[in-house]
View (cartoon, rainbow, N blue to C red):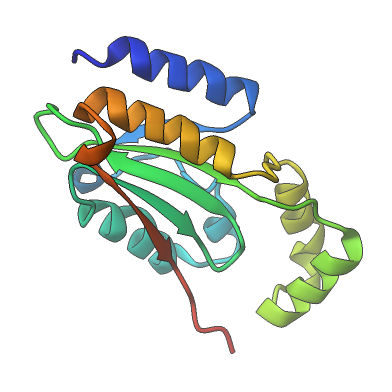
Length: 167
């Protein structure tokens, strides 16, 4: 893995931002919950599998994906080159705005979050890193992409949305 120093730098910067970075092999599954268990305590396991297994399995080489899910959580992910299996590097979740209690209550009602889960879900969002200027992360990941793929013209950045139909 010739890009090990660049990956270590990316991981160190991410720690400073309180941003989780994971390396996964989606076909093997994982006990690590990329979303810190949000979909588990909302009983959305099928949604978790669609998002963090199926989408990651479809990821193409030389592509950085910028994902925003239905809960306004953001992730960046890419397929690492030269690995024996389809290995994905994923960063997130993070949000791009501070959560206010009033806004949370409005969204919780919109998404049908039961009142007994309000505190737990609100605490979840209050503990996510807030990165208001996401261009910093895009530039960081672009520099990483240039390093591992050999230049800015060797990869693309794609925006992906993940939506759920709520009642």
